[in-house]
Amino acid sequence: MFEARERHARSPAHETALACLEAGIEAAAPARAVERAVSLDGDALRVVDATYDLGAFDRVLVLGAGKATAALVRALEARLGDRLDGGRVVVDAPPDPPLARVEAAVGEHPVPGAGSVAGAERVLELAETCDERTLVLAAFTGGGSALLAAPVAGLALSDLRAVTGALLSAGAGVAEVNAVRKHCSAVKGGRLAGACAPATVVTLLVSDVVGDDPAVIASGPTVSDPTTFADALAVLDRYGVEAPAVRAHLERGRDGEVAETPTPGAPAFDRTATHLLASGRTALEAARETAAERGYATCLLSASVEGEAREAGRFHAAIARETAERGDPVAPPAVLLSAGECTVTVRGDGTGGPNAEFALGAALDLAELPDGVVVGSADTDGRDGSTAAAGALVDARTVEDLPEARAALAANDSYGYLDGRGALLRTGRTGTNVNDLRVVVVHPPADDAGSGV
Image (cartoon, rainbow, N blue to C red; front, top):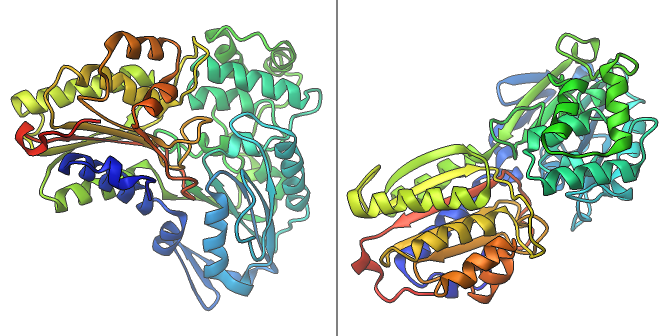
């Protein structure tokens, strides 16, 4: 999976870190998720613990969006065959090979573009043809918020692009960004479910958000929205984002001049159900199993790590130190694991993403430790932020010049620095997206003698 794997796997600790990351990414693949959760026996379609009678429907359609949605739809096509009548989704690259029964439009990510708007309009057009004899499989994965972008009347694509870019650069969390997006959209925050009504809508999710809240994943197009216009305005205020057109729209909504997004109990959700097929915890459990099979003691730190990426990296390095020096929280040889969604507050003009910044933050403190500690961090979709790397693998020898590394971090140039040290991990597109996966391997130093970058 990882390019130049032999170069990266230069010690038992490095090899184990790579194996854990690979196992996590593979376990979260949509094809494996569908294999576990979806089956068809005659007219009986089973999804997790629910069964749907296909004989009760004239059409079965797929609607959706996300970076892993093409792979999810491909798996559904294989499962349902000719029982699937069609559909439309928005993805971030043309599916290769093309999908068999579902139309795929290409949108932009992480900031929406013209393709995101055109694709969302096509999805809405098909949704509005649904009736009570239609079963909609709503396939949503991470990235759907940007890819499925239909601005409400009075807002332009440029308004959505500006507010999204400003919030991401300011370090806003995904739930905060999505609270704003939902209140500027004709499709998010349950509005797609309203367009599909009175169809039966079965939402299938591959989660890339901490906590796996269906209302946050892809901005919840088919589920009720607990946030309000006032909440969205509070996000803009919190991060000092002006966005005049968006702010004016949100103020009209707060004042009751624009209808709120559908809330729990709204008629749009009378015939809806939601199923989680895979998440960051899916990846974590697979990584932990791989480490245990290799004879390591394991500790799952958290599936919900958020905050500044560089600080999270330093925190993981601190736990690595405790493990190496004191045997807490687990005695080495050990593997510590976490998942979540860190953010980067952009202050410099360098290149990087949350995983590279996490790794460089950790590497600064690993430089003070003996050999034997390796830290790996990767975005499971294969793209760390807007870079071509998935993340990075670092150890005590990654940073040789502390001032240089600190300067790179200050400039948000983790990608450039780690690329120069041969520490970046590249996978290409993985076909899944369940957030970031991190692994810390702690060996007794003698086991990793001579393992520098």
